[in-house]
Image (tube, rainbow, N blue to C red; front, side, top):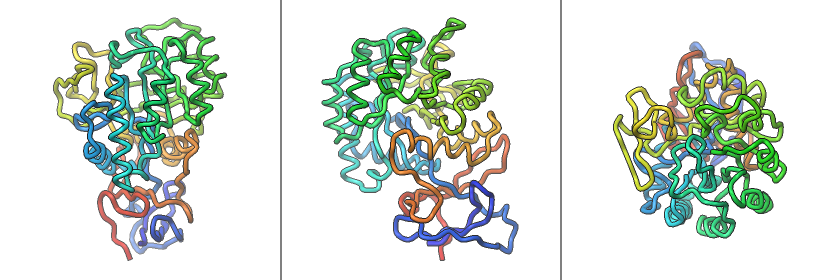
Length: 388
């Protein structure tokens, strides 16, 4: 399979040759037509935080392997070739059911096992305070429980690779140490912690701030506060939801300039209601409203968001626009940086790399990525290409 496109880092026209699951050659080409007619080509997106899609959640006591497959397949449309199915705060039974279904789906479909390098457990060991708790249901917020986690890890087939936790909850620091020793990456999020508690979590091994600037009080102390404490730490990556609803452009710019593009990760944090028409929806845990202009909020108010309705392609394009990034910088925040954080295979546009690729059109500022084709391990999963 040969693909002609523009390299996302240089803008130069290239021909990518794929043999089996990997890139075997990359050669320069000299097309007869204007190169602006060619799509861009880049590694597929890797999103650390996908909660579900079209009314289906990964954290669901009735989740089936077929649901997992359906949810995951839909994300090829947005150029996503790797994702961490994210289970939010729920009952123990819901979490067990969710991780079990994900394990079964990955065992059933080899392509899905390649798409899912690991799962993200966001909660239930989070702040119970309004604001920091966000849309996580208060009735399921609980102290950190290593024995519960061991059960969840076992039923997942050892697939839980990332846990978001609030450092101030009972048992959190010991949990962080145990998790890091077992190879699990720890993120700080949905927290009302004091600066010394943030520092204690970092010293215990936390390496990420989950959607920094969100999962917070509507009004906080000027300083010190838990946002400054995380922003000022060189040991933490920061993930950002750059959908234009969760955080303003000036905050995006500040975080990226502080953390640098090398330590910032873009996530869409797509809600299970992403893709649904405007209206009020609910499940066993909460009631939300999908608004006409895009945001998804906890029903009955307009301040507390309940995940995003946008996908990774939109969030990367918005981050490029908000922070004045290059295409390569924006894409790396949603490809290379998540890989580095989790210590998994880094997909690159080079010989020998697994052919997880997306072809897209992008015209520049204020434009969205228009994904045309997505390949996972050398196989076209969305769209089509002319091969020779």
